[in-house]
Image (cartoon, rainbow, N blue to C red):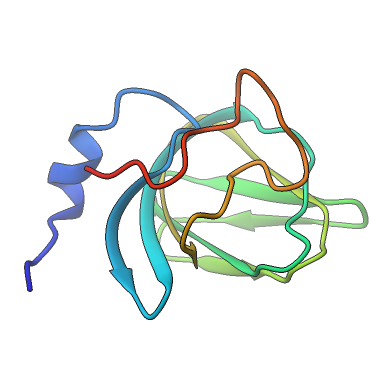
Length: 120
């Protein structure tokens, strides 16, 4: 059992859109990631995802609406729902999702698809 200092872990992240695992529980992973710009539209057929704004603001776009997230707010995106995160300025985000989940879901993108299970 180790405590995790979010500021310390975020300081180790140098790339956008590359989630890093910082904890695991019950088949789920706690990940940290920095966003900036637009992520590709995608969905996860069998998995829900939680996005929490730790520092900065961003939005999750859906085909029928947009949800703005500020520091301390989170959203759970249900499985099968197409979405894309967008951040005008760099934002630090905590993700909670099933272990070994590919960040781009049903899409493979050379620029955005990140290695699975990358830990810091």
